[in-house]
Length: 193
Image 1 (tube, one colour):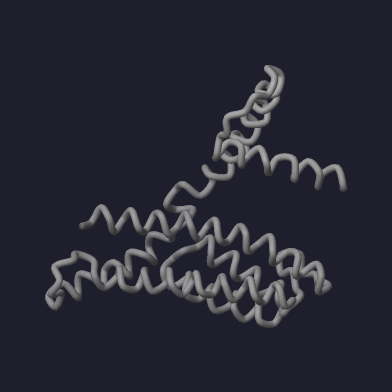
Image 2 (spheres, one colour):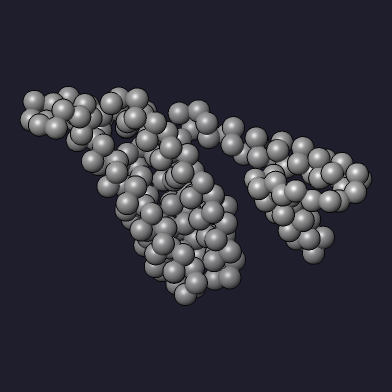
């Protein structure tokens, strides 16, 4: 297991090298080694990034369309001329709420407060479900259960340290899924201007 941990730590600096190339005076053999690591890391990143790229993987379009349909009902009273002002307000409110909740989740993880994590997961699950942000919704539902020291998929109870570790990993994935959904929604509203 320690070899796996070392391997994971070894790949982290490679990513930083990719993102911020720095001029160096290393020998010819060193760039070849970096190139091999970059190829592997690039493949890993592509696989992760390609999974949620489809709208259906990130957003439940039927649910989100119901929010967008409210714009049509509100168009007559829209003084500022923005096409989707009502739904945009709801979406931007969700962004603020989600980011604040992520901060609270980080604090609860630091305090090892599983009940608070369960409660925050439940809260963000509902907000995400209302907009059809299905990946975040699913992650938050798992967090809610883990906070109650329960793995609903396997039907097993969890010890506190294991539940906390699962929540940490889940929060990282949840934030990534949130960023994908946020970018998709920001692009949608930008196109509608």
